[in-house]
Structures are given as C-alpha cells and as structure tokens.
Image 1 (tube, rainbow over the protein chains, first blue to last red):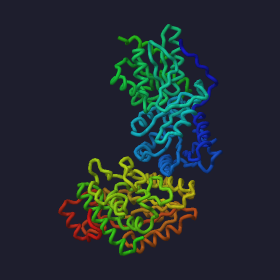
Image 2 (image 1 turned 90 degrees about the vertical axis):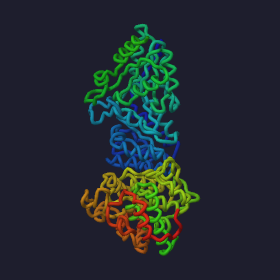
Image 3 (image 1 turned 45 degrees about the vertical axis):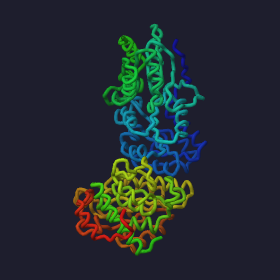
Image 4 (image 1 turned 120 degrees about the vertical axis):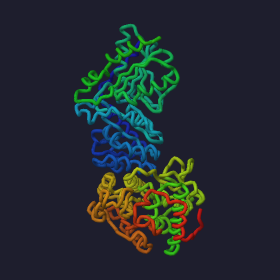
Length: 319
Length: 281
C-alpha cells in the first residue's frame, strides 16, 4: 500500500534553505553568509537583515567569494557561500577543490537554482553536472533535499557538521510533503514508501515524482519502494543494498546529467555488492532549455509517468 | 626580533636550505624562493607576531601568513623550520613520499605553521581577506599577511579580491608581491605583461609601498610603514622589487631556475657562494 503524502502547499526548496540559515544564525554567532550579488535569489536576505555584520556581499566575483569563505572558516567561522548552482560549482571548481575540499575548511556551498527545474533561464543556468563535480571531491559531503521542510532541516544539520558540504536546492515552488519537525541525519537514506516489487531511489525534486510513480504503479498492483537519497555523499550503502536485495530491481531518478550522478553511484555500489538490474531517470547527456519546470520534467522524461514506465521495465528485467 | 646582521645570517642559511632541498628532491622551485627569501625572513624573524609553540590554524591572537604563490615551499618550509615550527632535519624529506613537506602547502599532512593549502595560483589573497574579516568579527587586532608572485597577478581572481578588500575596508591585511619580473615561460613583460603593478594597486585603492626586497633596512622600513598604514580603512600592499634566483650568480635574474633543481655539482657551486651560518639540515 503506497504511503499517502500530503502536499501541505507548494514551496521552493531555496526558501527552506533561507529559513534554516536564519534559524542556524540565531543559534550560532559563528555562522556567516556570503553571496555573489544574489542575496534575494538564494534566500540569504532574511539572514542579511537579521545579522548584517555577519553577511558579506561579494559582488559578481564567485572565485573570490569561495576563497574569502575559506579564510573566514579558518578563523573558526561557519561560512555559507551561496549563488546559482552553476556559479558555485563549475565556475569555481578549482577554488572549491583547493580552498574548501583539500583545505578542509568549514565551508557550506549553498547551491540554489540547481537542475533543469530552474526553468525559463535556460541551459546556461540549469546545471545538471554539479553532483558529478562535487561528488568527485574528497572530503566533500553532498546533500540534495527533496522539499522545503527537508531543505530547512538539512541546512540546520550542516551548520552543526564540521567540514565542507555541498547543499543543492532549487528555484521553483514544488510540493512540500515531508514533516515540518524532522531532524535531518547526514548520510541516512529515508524510506518514503515500503514496497516489494521494485525500488525507486530518488533525490531532490524527483522524490515527489517517485511517490507519484508509486501511486500509479499501486493502481496496477505493483508495490514500489521509494527511497529518498537526500545525502548523495556519503551514500547510505547499507540501505541501498538492503532495498535492492529485497525488491530485486531498481530505478534511479535524479534531475542531473547521466554522467556521475546518483544512477552511476548506486549502480557502482550494487555492482560490487548486490548485482541488480537498474533503470535510469535523468537528463541524459544533454543540456537543458527554456521552459516551465513541469514542461521540462516531462520533456526530459523525469516525471512520475516516466518513472513508473522505468519501474515496469526494471521489473521485466528481473531474472 | 632579529637585528639586521642576524636577519642576513638567517636568510643566507635559508638560501642554502632552499638549494639543498630542491637538489635533494631533484625538483622544486628555487628561483622565486630565493627572490623572496629576504623579505620573508624579515617577516618571520623581525615583524610578525607568532609563536610556534602555541600555534593553531585558526590564528587566534597571532598574526597569520598565507603563501599564495604556493610553489615557493622551499623558502616557506625553511623559514618555518628555522622559526621552530618543526625540526630543521625534516627539511630533508621535502617532496618525498609520505612527507609532511608536500610539494605545495597542505593541511592534510598536519605540518604546523600552515594556515591554508595553495598551489593553484591567484587564490591566497581571497583566503587571507577571509581570515582578516574573521579577525575583525572576533575583535582580534592582529594582522594577516599574504604573499603573491608577480606572475600570479595575471590571475583574474587577484583583482576580484583587490576590489573586494577595498570595498569592504579590509584594513588589517598586508599583502606582498615578489616583483621579480619573471615567470616560468620567461620575462613577465614577454609572456603576458602585468604592467605597472604600483600604479595598478594604487588605482584599485590599496595603500601601496614599493621597497627593495633584498635590502633588510629597506624591508624593515617598508613593513613598519605598512603596519602604520593598517587600521585606516584601506588594505595595504608592499611590492618588493627583487631578483629571481638572488644570491647565486649563475641563477640570478633569469627564469631558468624558476622550477628546476640544480645538479649536485651545480648545487655545490652555488653553496660555495653562501656561507653556512646556522648549520645545514
């Protein structure tokens, strides 16, 4: 029986980050926030208003922002550096690699507007390569929450964690369905729906689509397990292996390029531990384009219908 | 604080260390290490407030230093060792497998005295500015020093940082450029000229001082003026005019020894020009 989730009202994950940052800032005077001319867009404005002395506007100069954040972290600050996902990954990869990951500085990369659901701005801004880039860095934790509440909880959790973190979240208003009072555990997969015929591992906005797919499948008599991989690195390998062993076939769903994301990650873990058929829902090896989030999710095969189709195919491949 | 004679003795020994380290490792960067040896010796032995025995990476309560030109580890490690951050004998492990003395400054291996990783150029000024902002938030009145190469000023991030520091009135930082006019591929003017660095830093809004980087009296005078200029709403830059490879006749004034180790024979020839003042490692 598919678990029924209630959408308590569409909200953007970036606002979940903003609410989490403000709350974390009230608790801990060592938290500082930096942005590169996008305070409102990445939802740092409430923090900036509440703690102007701890908010640092860097202007359109992302490389310097990452280095400055690292320097602040060396002195004991917890530095949140935020911009659009493309500009805090691809544009500053070397700065993050040297100053944050290799330098082991307590910097949190606040990566807003990630994935294709950024929408109308088009491919220059719709990064779908960021998980691959950040996953490849030693010492880096990679988190991709699925809704407003989870993004807020994750922000509070990473403020308490000592070390580099990449927090990926989005722009559009999307269903908000996880508990408001949840405590986010870094490195823990979250079972959203228990099932026995197929496992859908999903991350970010596609967790809601995966839940929708499970409901479609249930109507056909198929029992789908849905697992929210909110922490991509370190991956909860135990949970991944246990679920794949139980259902015997898997779908991986992510708003990301096919290269280097969740699908390849889980496939690698399963190949080494529990060889299992895997189907993939992702953006392929393509750039995005202008459109509404719903149009783009459908066009790139990332919506509930496409996930359900992938699940049927995964089941058909069971030996 | 060391006097002029003592500083000269230390920097001569540092130059011997540099040559012996890169020869021992059969790789490394002696040229810029020797051009910056005098003003970095003066910084650690005559200017900076620091204590190897109580050092922590956060730099709380002390002055901090970031080597943005991270390839200059020979001079950096020699000065740290001679200051007492780790045994001088450890200099013999430079660039060896398993050593804390990695090719470029590294945090993971736990070498005391290192505040930040560096090596990919153009980034250290930003990190130093971040440390300076951290000190301001903590009401810590100590300073942050950072050294860049002049070739490094070809990196765009340096100028992002330059504008940022002025806009935010980061006036507790003293940056230094080793203005030796050389980079790996040749003279800076021939490779991708950075032009008049003095005019550039001034027009970006930095309090800018130019000094002879091989004259200890001038070096100490420049640091004194720089420290006096801090706390007045502007970041401070010292451009040290220097010679790549300074101290050894066949290495001076050329880019040939930017990133190349001398043979054992040439090393001996070079060492003959530098008196062993404090005992080799």
